[in-house]
Length: 507
Image (cartoon, rainbow, N blue to C red; front, side, top):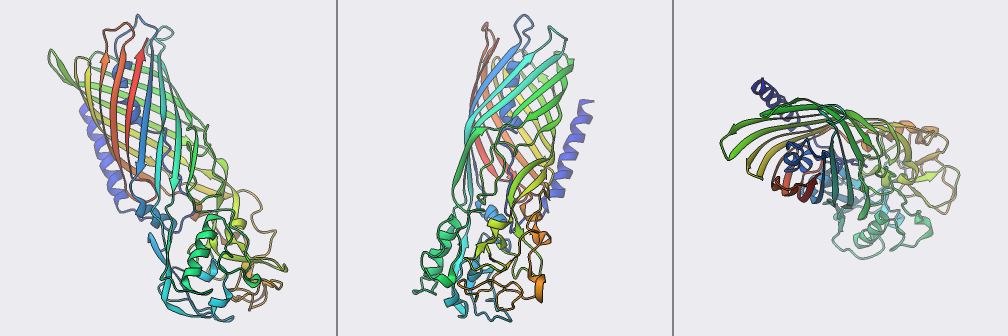
């Protein structure tokens, strides 16, 4: 029976891996929800399960561990492709000639610089030689303390148990944006564009190098690109379970699980905002744990361990910054959340699209799975664990919650528009893409909800640990160390490594 179960699980894992190895990477996205920090079965189980599964029915039945950990992402170039455009971590942002009737974009550029920083003086000059490049090489660093508690409730019902975990973490995200140019001097040169872009993305004044009223634009307030960190409790997970098998050579248990959201929720203020927890989504599901002794002699043994954790994460309200889509209204969807809009009838500075498209949305993450299969070697109180972890999460469903932008009349401003005059969205000379009359207006149909949704995630990790349990003590002490490396099959998830140290006690 155990062999059949093991074979089935291995076949399922290999099938899922093969299906996702060819998955396309994402690009031109505005939001990423990484794997929640607290969802880490390998970190929880190494050495600690030796303490939990010891025979101690004469005790209170409580087991507690504290785990200090550090983890860091390693696939910055892939994340650069995720947030930038054309599946590139470095993109060309050129300047090109423009006419009111027929916009002319320089070939090979992912987006025109004058759509991001208004610069009428350069908008009519084709600059084929001197382009500005944008590069992203994001890195996430996480450290914290994880608290795990397991209570044997055999005095109430034989086989009943309660477990809970609570990670206290600091999440730091650094987009590591670099802007480079050939250094051409002057108001319309790439050096000036470089300075303005750097200020613009950080949320400062984009007029830093060209304080000209005709080029006025307000500061970016949403989707900013800057290093940020967030601290807090990354959700509380509680399981009420029952061990329906509890023999000397094998055991198995099944529990009902509840995820209580305690972290932060997305606001869309920053492009790569740090998320503590799963984004404030309640979760309901089940845990399965099991193990079997495969080999033993008088001093040593080898055990097979299996842990499966499924959660369904329910809908919650968030705010996310949306890009724009629609061929007739948007000249180039790349980085469209940073393109400049004019408000019909207003004589005012141009507005970054992100300031307008930051909207309330309903987000449903759906199914999430975290599973471990490991072998552990035991000799006395010493143990060594080596295992495989599979993590999978369904792609998010993101829907607009409120009225959106239907009550306002914005359109993409022409690179030649003079901001000292009124913006007329029906005038061909005022808009970047002219579509006859009122159809220039951006509506909810132009909001790119898919670009703000994290796609399906699938990762494979190898983890290991070593530790010692002083089982002969009245209150057994546990000490352990461990680590993992996690491989992501596409850039919807982070590839990362982690280390941890742990101590625990049973009483």
